[in-house]
Structures are given as structure tokens and as C-alpha cells.
Length: 463
Ligand SMILES: Nc1ncnc2c1ncn2[C@@H]1O[C@H](COP(=O)(O)OP(=O)(O)OP(=O)(O)O)[C@@H](O)[C@H]1O
Ligand SMILES: [Mg+2]
Image (tube, rainbow, N blue to C red; front, top):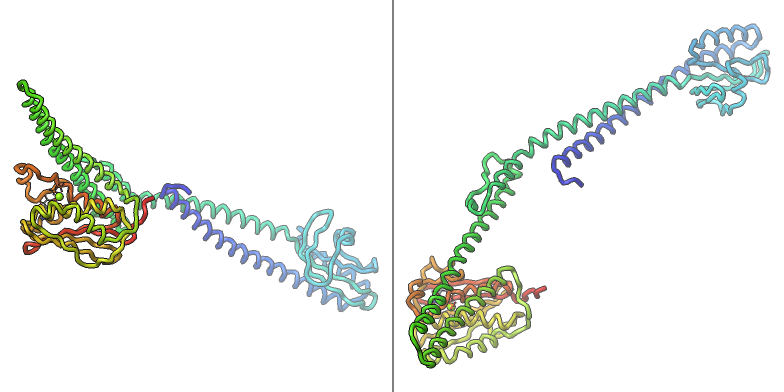
């Protein structure tokens, strides 16, 4: 099937016109054929009745001679109507081509068709048998009408009809092409607008005014896609800047530390210290790069692999255990609440990583001796794990952006603090949730901050 809408429309118009006209033509042809046949039959009937009347009343040879003259006069010069009288008595015979007649099967009395073998003329016939009367033996009277003019009329009509139909179809195709061109012009306008779009002009949208309703949906969808693209593009640009910024600090530290170390002769111990601090910076760099690689893979829509059925409460407990030293140090506690028997299919390592990030934040952002709570709940085919901690309320404007890469609520802390995170923790939580068909949620009210993620109860296994 052709891929051009114009060609397709024109083809459909043509097929539609052809079907309609063929139907009308066939009906007209049928009517004409019936009328012509009726007309011929009327003619046959009239002639037959006329001759029969005379034949039945007179049976002597004198009248027979007169009847022959009458039949002669009734036969037109072009021979389009013919009479034949057949009998066993050679005296009572009439008609042109009698010897031919004898050779054809004349059939029974009534209507029939007759083709003379020598001249090849075909006649529509009507015949009847007359009983003997006076001198005359039993005879068969046949009246024939030549079908050639009839056939000719039908053929001429058919040719005219075919030519008219073809002409009309061609006309419809032409008009259809023109209509399609006009109808598709808005589409062309749209393509021109779309062609002009560049990464720099992503903020532009296709103009909706004067567009046919059929295209409104498409245009709106396209504009929606543009909006998302623009957002992603901006995010990507911002992300690049963030990455550069994030790598600059450890690099500057590395270069600075190394330069200082090299500025004058040092003892082996001093070099060791420098190398040690360099190693810490390098590890920091590595962890940022690893996190970013992980996020990039998750971005590509990679689903979690290595799924196993796990007891959620158990995994939470194991993760908390890992933080025990830190918790003890701050005198804080973590309680597990909610559905302690929940089961889920998940990648256990990823699950622990996400929960660790939440716990780390909660511990970091709560005062010493705080009571943290991890709540497990089941909602709409998903298991939710929420970590709540008392602490400074996060302003509502920040909440939706917490899961963005490199986003920190208090950016000043980032430059001043020594052991600040690099703002990828929650982005990773979000990625892990997405890889398990889940989502994330953050609320902060009246000094209680709750950050949660979910995983689908039955995560689809990765292909
Ligand atoms: N429980 C919390 N209470 C208050 N603020 C929080 C909490 N969790 C996260 N935040 C805020 O959200 C920001 C982003 O958190 P995220 O875990 O992504 O980054 P980070 O902790 O700064 O760095 P990273 O986790 O990569 O070491 C944090 O900088 C902090 O401002
Ligand atoms: Mg964090």
C-alpha cells in the first residue's frame, strides 16, 4: 500500500466512483436489455397473430398464393422481420433460406433463438403449429426478428457507458487529488514549522490557530513532547554544569594538595599524608562517577535484574544493623513499623542501597537522640518503605526537587561543610524505585520529614 495520503485518498475516490458508476451502469444496461427484448417480443407477437388469423381461415391454394404475397409485403427490405411456413407438402412452403431451416433444430412451438448456418444471421423467433384445414396440411408458422440491430444497440450502449465511467473516474481522481492537496495543506504548514525547530528553539511550539480539529490532537501531543524534550534538555544542560561543578572541588583539592606537597622537600611521612588525603579525594571522585554511571543506566530504562523473593522487614532490619555504630554514636534509635510480613520480589542489593541512602539522610538531618521510624506498608500492588525523622521542616518548594540529581536544600552547607554528600543519594533512591516499577514520595510537616519509595509487589523480571 502506498504511503502517500494524497495517493491513497485519490485511489479511494477512484475506487468509490468506479464501484458506484459500475453499479449504475449495470442497472441501466439491464433495463435497456429488458426493454429491447420486450419490444422485439411485441413485434413477433403482432406478426404471428396477424398471419395465424389468415392461415387458419383459408386452406385452399388460391388463398395460399395471396397469403404468400401478404408475407412478402410484411417482410421489410432489410429482412429484419422474416416469415417461414414449414410443412410436409412442398406446395405449402414459404420463406427465405428454407433449405437452411431444414438443417437447424427448430425446437418446439413458442419462443426461441435461431441461427442460420450459412448467412450466420441470428433471429429471435416465435412459432406455432396449425392443424390441417381444407387442402392445407398441418404447418408450422415461424416469425423471426433479426437480433443484429438489437445487439448493435446494446454494444454501442456498453461502449458509451464504459467510456463515460472511465472519464468520470479520471475526473474524480483529478478532483480528489486537488481536494486532498488542499485538505493536507495544514499538515504541510505543520511540517514546515516542525522543520524549523532546533535545540536552541525548543521553547517554541507549533501554532495551533487555524488548524483543523483532526490535527489539533496531534499538534497538542507534539507540543507536549516538545515540552518534555525541552525540560529534559534543560535538565541535561544543568546536569552537565552540575557534574563539572561537582568534579571541580575534589580536583582542585587534589591539585592544591599535590602542589603544596611538591613546593618544598618533604619527608616520607609528609608525602604519605598527602597521598592519603589524595586517595580520599580520588575515592570521592570514583563514587560520584559510579553513582552517575548507575543513574545513567537507570535512565535508559534498565529494569532491576537478579530479582529474588524477599521478606521486606528482614531486609530493613539488616540494613539498619549496618548503621548501628553511627546510631549508637548519636544515641538515636530506629523502629520498624507497619506490615512486618510483607513479601516482595526485588534486587536485594539495590533495595538496601536505597534504604541506606534514606537512613543516612535521616540520621544526618536529625538531632542526637532522635527516634527514627521505618514504616512498611502495602498499597495498590506496591510495597512502600517510608523513613521518618524529626528535624527542620523542608519548605514545600523544595520537596518535588529533592530527588533531582545534585539537588540540596541548603546549598551553602555544600561549600562550607567538609563531609557533605554530593546530592545523588535521593536520585539513586528514585532510580532504584523506578527499576522496580515503583515511585517516590517526600513530605515534611511540623518538624517531621518522611521520605519514601515503593517497589512493585511483582516487579517484572528484566529481559
Ligand atoms: N531526612 C531529611 N531531612 C531533611 N532534609 C533532607 C532529608 N533527606 C534529604 N534531605 C535534603 O535533600 C537533599 C538531597 O538529599 P540527597 O540524599 O540526594 O543528597 P545528599 O544527602 O546531600 O548527598 P548524598 O546522599 O549523595 O551523599 C539533601 O541535601 C538535604 O538537603
Ligand atoms: Mg543523602
